[in-house]
Picture 1 (cartoon, helix red, strand yellow):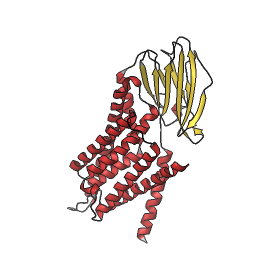
Picture 2 (cartoon, helix red, strand yellow):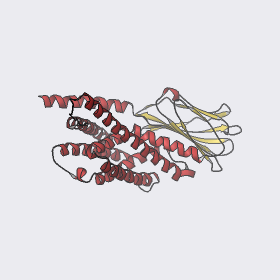
Picture 3 (cartoon, helix red, strand yellow):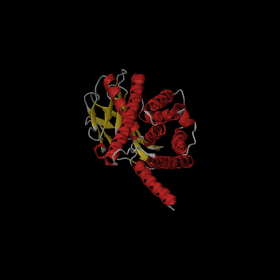
Picture 4 (cartoon, helix red, strand yellow):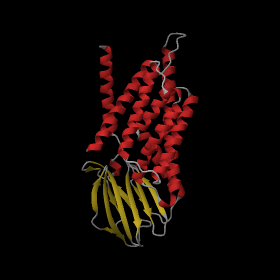
Length: 341
């Protein structure tokens, strides 16, 4: 009876967490302006959407610009508009604002491509919903923009974070963990670059489903280890991390394709996006270890003299593994179901 109650509690907690995670999933908007001539621009505007509902974000051009009626459509998880605008004297020096962004929880990546080849990239946030159009591109600004996007993507990518957390619980000690995380890094760097550059093309929906399956696999391996059943994930975690890292890299590439890469700085933006992903990943691992250490020290202070209580202990590890596995199973079912609707 106690075990049944335990599983019911885990299921309820996990289902609630899955709902919260789904409700707080944030995807960026994307604005592209291509200069046709000195006063004419083609605009592409992508807004996150769900079904036939879209975020209430709207592009506001400078007052000296006039726009044609946009062509719009829903495509996947985005609402897309295309139109042409005429700006007397050009856009250089003008300010572009995203109305509604300050009241949202998402970001917008904006890119301006000038006819002579110069490209400007800007990242707009709720606290900074506008930017000024410049005449020349700034490599440092491009690098910083894509670095921030990489950090935010991994820290808001709950499925990727759960996989990393499962690796931490599976591996345990620092030395093996460093090798495992390095293998994961090398693998997803390879597929991220290959998929983003168009060398490998894989449908995104099956990739997301298999990513959920990879999380389930590692969660099950943690439970098997506690039962004394040592599998390949325990013996050679770096092998498992490398194989599944290839899949996670394809997932990162799908996110990067949503915002695009500047044609003049593809290697730079790709490299710094990947660096951002790694920094975000290392920040998460460091936070987990700091949490382990803080709780362990707290438990030792409150324990009887001479009694050492390791943390995370077997009960905590098992509980967290059930939560991770159940969340992954929920995502697997949801994403697989998405193939047929």
